[in-house]
Length: 302
Image (tube, rainbow, N blue to C red; front, side):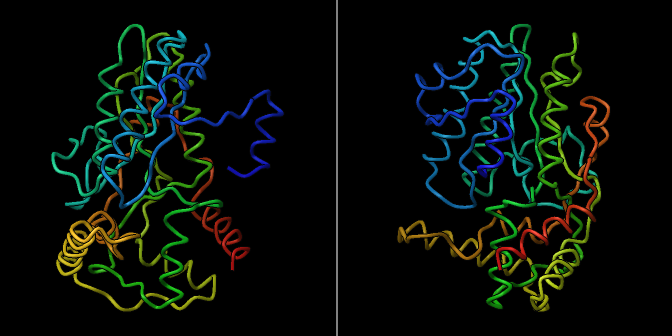
């Protein structure tokens, strides 16, 4: 988080604290009695050792639940990921009741599914819990999705996967933050409808992903992505690369993984009706403005 954001929080009385979420004792000491605990900490990435994802995302979440209970806070909002339902099939206006995948395309999505299950099972009279699944978060400060795609585009190595007509949801960072505040308020109701449930979060304006990305590239004076790779071929290449990296214990990460290939090729957008009715969530920053603000920030990085 940028220093100016820390300053804004400190002006409201917040005190920044750095700790290892895997350290049960440190987490127990850190959580004090508050109305609602927001658990956003996670090991994020398309590649990495399974035990690290498990330790941070599952064991760390268990520590947070225990600390919330010990502090007597009674309410917890957990940040999960739409990847828990997977990208093996197109999802159009996906329901919040979509089943969690039985097989996962990455250690990350597997660990988030396990942590999500833990959170939902803990919901009860003494601890109200809710799970949010913000989809493809972007905006100023993004260290993951857009910077990586733009770097490949600049190098001329980015390829469209599949037909290029897949429709996806994205979530501007401010809207993701508002969703957490809306969920916290909803949990404070006497009989919260959201307790024990999971909700997809997005800008609720699905876009043709490759058209949106090429428009963004044009605004940044980067050549558009015109070459494509069939989805089955990309999936086979991803599987082969993952196997090579795993067997040979190569440094870094594969150029493409099954998770990324699926996410870039499939349609995946979700019904915001449940989040609207149960959380009172609504996107405050529409896609047009969100894209403009993101482009302005990206220009400062060129």
